[in-house]
Image 1 (cartoon, rainbow, N blue to C red):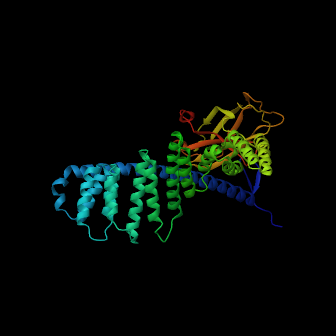
Image 2: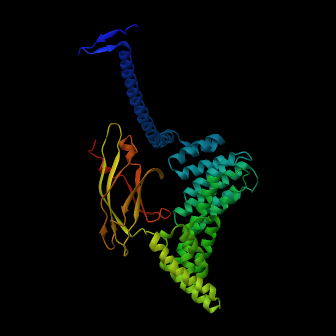
Image 3: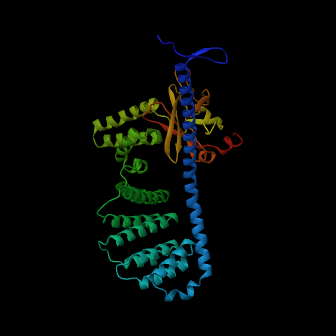
Length: 445
């Protein structure tokens, strides 16, 4: 047998050559792992910085474009020579003025461009209508659009769709919601001519129409014109049938004028968002409907409505937390730099300000970035051994530590913590939504 070659360390410990090689390999592997981890962290950090800089660069680019446009305009007397220039120059000048928000001069430039445009060139019509809308010259913008016959030309359809969306947005921004809704409907009319539909664009248009009609309905309610409010809400529902806010407004208004129809809406709402509806209004609609059914000699239906009153109350007591049932206290929030990251830790307390004792209660703490859920932590707030009694009883401190490693202090400002409370996981109630306070991480690095 060949004896393995032995070596002595400085501590006089004998080691074989194979053992030495294994130790060298392990040391090299650990060093490589540390290097890879460090490099990866630096790469992630650089990527996040790049993304942040990209958004910053867009804003800077816009400011730069505006500054350059101002300098070009100051150095050139466009007003003197514009009448002699060709179509392309007039369009370019109009865009320069539009960049600096000088819509009056932009209008003049686009008018000159329109006079020089060849048949079938629709962009100057759109650009002129756009700056007229920006100046709230709606009738003039409408006249420009009316000059274009409705055809199947793709560019014409595109420009008219955009123009009516802009007009609707402008009307909406100054509180003329009905005019805004009608413009959005015209935009949808032209959009619908496209052979290929874009679901995002279509959804956005429908939401705009529904939102404008909902605003009109709110004004009608304040004026005591509930029948008109119902009519406009029905229009809103037609464009956005899944909008629960519209359904809730209809349920509330109809609870007086048509309680049985109101119940149809309330039943759907109770099955989906019971925590956000007024159960007392629902109960009143049920009682009125029961009386109406009695008068119409429909005893079975009347019995059903009275049974629903009891079942709804029982359901709410067992399953539902309302947004105002609890107050939230943030006792501590720490964002202290650890290596290259800023982990978030928080301590909360919940105060039961409702009139009911609550036994089993849970909380979801959701870290979000630009409305996207990044991480969720679930905690037990109370149970049968530590119930939350009514009228001001406080929970024990709830400690939350998010695992998400945020890489820059600047990035922290974009994060939000949402807190949902619930008895039943199906019916979670948002009771708090706060941005990460800037003071929580200043001087903590």
